[in-house]
Every structure is written in structure tokens, then in C-alpha cells.
Amino acid sequence: MRRFLAVLTLSAVLAPTLWARRVEGRVHSGLRLLSGIIVTDGVNFTKTGHEGTFRLDASDANTFISVVVPEGFTVPEAGFFQRLEGRRWFDFDLNPSFVSNDYTLMALYVPAPDGDDTLGVFRREIMPALSDAALRLRIAGRTNALLFGRPSAEEFSELKKTKVPLYGVKSGGRMPDNYAFYLGSELIIVSDNPPFIGGLIGNASKDAALIIALSQPMYSMDDGGASIIEAVKGRKVDFISGYERRRHNTIFNDSIEEHVIPSLCGASWEDTRSSDGSPRGFSLFRHGAKGLEWQICNIGAAPDLQFEVITPGGNAKYPSELLVRVWDYDSKWEISWAQDGASMGKMKEIEPGLLAATPGRYAKEAQIKVTDRFGAVRLADANLKEHPEMSESFSVRDKTEAQFYAEVFSAIGRGVSTLGFNLQLTSSGSVILCRDSYPRYSDAPGGIRAADLIRKVEAYTLGKGLSPRRYTFSVNSGSGVGEGKVWPEFRKFADACCNVLMDAGLGERLMVASFDDRLLNYLHSSRPELELMYYIDAESGEYKDYMGVLDFKPNWLSIQYEILSPETAEKARKDGISIAVWDISSDEFAREARKAGADALIKD
Image (cartoon, rainbow, N blue to C red):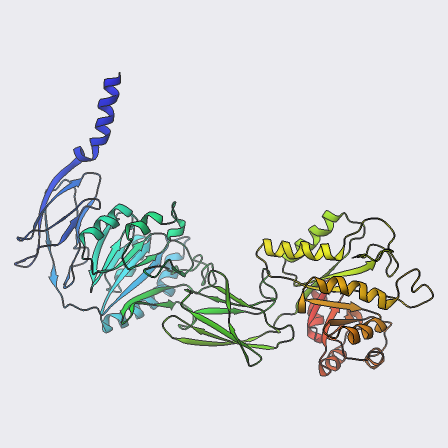
């Protein structure tokens, strides 16, 4: 039995060799015999000798044998590979061509059809753009195309009408899975297989720049592309990959970059955009003075559309930020911005291809300058007041602490940018969230301290990778015989709360609000750096009445929805005061408040 197992194991080890068979052939250009040409079956390699002949131990497990067409030669379509199919002799006849580094490589990702009309969409919407580009490129110089995905026979037939030679990347048996050819002085390798890539590079010129076409991005591979990176160690390589329906560029180091191309159809055949919002399209790669250069070509969108601007309030994860999503972004791009005409410097990348800056709360306009790695400049303007601030107020009454925080964190997840809370003092002077009838002292034990609330919210947003939120803390004191006894005197109340709040280091993210004009006047004089909001309800009277009791103009008026009017909003705007509206309990109220001139909407 042991002897049987030993023989079986030896057979398994020798199997690839036993299955290999010797094949021979010749590589020539007419009568000219070509020596030094690489020949491969996708696993094994050899080179032609002085008479242009070669011998190769080809594996029966492989389907094709191919030659690496050198610089200065071309072949008819599919002429660089032949099927093994039990043959012993192979003849490759290469056509002479002029030697030039002037070429264009089209990169197309074509998903399989999905639905009855996808071929119609391909013919009506995709092919005109491809045909027009191919015509212009053929006139300009030599053009080839890398074809990613699994196009149907009908799609492939349509693509052939461009008259651009098509090189399939894992094409489902149309072409080899592992092969290579030269364009100018660059070696184009089509393979996901590290041993093939390493073996081919070992047989190729050490001076050749490398472009390697992958059927999927390296980060989606089992080892994150580590084995492929190791196979090209020490070489200058640009990877071009398909597979995912979005586009981006990744710089691994000074020598290695990867370019993920978009789908021709978008995120699906029903869309005109990819999953990252970029237009559907393809990419062009050219040899430039400083190496490989590339260009995104949009289908169904402006040719120069390379990024989108998202104004504050347009993204739930970063509701207070000005965002610029740059398709094909990498660290060699530069995105800078200005606020109301004042230069603010560079924007910061917070996610791959997503850059952010935090405008001032009262800024109106932004100017964005996008400079790509090749020096092309694109400009855009943004209305920073396109979206109103979304605020929500929270109460701890009749809730457990866990229920309360669940509500707060849920609102943060929905993109609420400003969180509102009422404050109260305990008899011992602690600042807690209001749980009784303010402004009375709270004598019951426990309570959520304002400082603890801020720490938890800050930790939550940081841990989730969300942008920091703004806070509005209501300090509602009251006059009368109970002041200073049943409830705190307004100055004591204001000082106790602000000492805690300002210690949290929130800066301009902190707002203190009140119905009490006395407290607001006191805070303005004692802490002029504080942002202040004045609450107005139906009992406050006319604009001139409630504004007449203040010694200053507050940053915000928070007006009850029922008494908001465009006239009030216009008066406040002339005084440089922003308008917040409460209680916004429906989408209809929100639309009406926005129409009347609200800058922020508060949901209780």
C-alpha cells in the first residue's frame, strides 16, 4: 500500500512533464527569418534561434501558443497566436511596420448584456462614441484596444467595426489568457498570472517599459496583488484593470501605478453613470514625454467632466463639508479652493478620490480649482447655501440613556449636521441635559452630563469616520420671584453652562440659544466670541419689538414655523442674521420654510 501511494505521489509530481509535448515552428516576416522572438504557451517560454525556428515543451493543458510581436512588426488580427489542438508545427508570419513610440491604447470594459434591449443600447449610445473616437485616433496614428469584460458575440462584432485591433483580457476563449505584444518600446502584457508575468519579464528586454492588463483590480485579488507586485519588482509598470464599474488611479510607489477603467455602460445598462457617479466611458493611454499619459473619455457627458462638487448638506456622512469627488484622482493631482474670493489652500483627501474642506458657517460661495497630474486645469463655482442646515433637537425625558443615544446616533447617520439639546442645572451646580420642567433646578439623582454627551458624540463620529457635528445648547432661564431660588439666576446659569461647553473645544461648532434676552445680552458682553441664537415664538411680537430688547444683533434668529414670513426673513438678512425655523415636522413645512428664506431647519 505504501509503495502504491509513493508511485501515485510521484505520478502527480511528474504529471505536468508527462503531459507536455514538444512543438516546433518558425517566426518570419516574408522571407526574413526573425531570431530572438519570445514564444510561449502561457506557461513555458522559449526564443527563436538564428533561423527563426523554435522548439517548446508545450503543456496539453494549454489552449494556445503565441509569439510576443516585437517592435517594428505587426500581425493580421489574431495572427500572433494559434490554437495547439494537437498540432506539432506552427508558422508565424509578421508584417513589417515603422518603428515609433507614437501610439494610442484604448481601454474598454464591456460587460455582458443584461436584458432585452442592452444590445440596442450598445448600438445606439455606445458605438457612435467609440466609432468617432476610433476614427480620430486612427487618423492620428497607430491605435490598439484592450478589451476587458465578457462581451457577447454581437457586441464583439460591433466593436470590430471600429477597425481597431482588439486584444481581449481573459476573453473567454477568444484569445489566450496570458500573452504579450510590443507597442513602440513598451511591452504590453495581458495576464493575471504572476509566474507568467515574471517569466515573460525575465525573457524580455530590461529596458522595456511595462503595461500589464489585469482582468480585475489588484485589491480584489486574494492576496491584494502582492504576488504580482513581487513578480515585477524593480521594474517600471503601469497596470490597467477592469472588473469594477467605477474608475480610479492608485499609486503604489514611484514605479508602479494601477488604472481602473470604467464600464462602457455605467453601473448597469439602465444607468449612464458608474457606481461612483462618474460618467460611463473608456480610457486612452499614450506614450508621452514623461512616460505614460492617459485620458478619460466620457460617453453621454461633457468630455471635460472629470469631477463633481457636493456642497454642504449634500452628503449625509459629511454634512458640513464642501466635497469634490475626482474620478481618476491620485496624489499627483492638486485640488485647491477659495471661499468668497479668499484663497483657502488645498483640499484634503478623506476617502479615495473624495476631497473635503470645511467652509465657514456663513460663507456663501466657493471656487474650486482642479489641476490634474498632466497640468490641465478645470474650474468650478459652488453655492455654499444650496442646502439648508439640518438640525434636530433631542430630549431625555421618558427615555433610558441607551434610547436617547440611539436617537442621537441615528440622526447623525441620517446626515443631521446640527444637534440641539436643552440644558439644566442641578442644585449642586452640575450641567446636565434637561429632564424636568426648565429652568428649575433638577434635584433627582443621576442625569446625563453635558460634558459626557459631547465626549460620546465626538467619539462616535470619529470612530465611524464621520465629520464632526455642530451643537446648539439651549440655556432657557426665566425671570420672576423663583429666580435664584427655585431656578438659577440667569447669569449663574449662563456661566455654569458656558464654562462646561467652552471647555469642550468645539470652536465655531458651538452655539448657545435662549428665549431670554437678558441672558443673551449678558453672554454677548461677557463672551463675545460665542455664537448666539435668539428663540422667537408667537408671543414675541413684531421684529422691531423682539430685536429692540437686544443690545446686539445675534448670529441667528430661531423662529417658530407658524410665524415665519418672507418679510421677517428679509429684515433679518439685511441685518446680517441667519434664520433657523422650528418645528419642521413635515416635508411640506420644510419646503415652505426654505421658500420663505430659512437657512436652517430644526426638527424637534
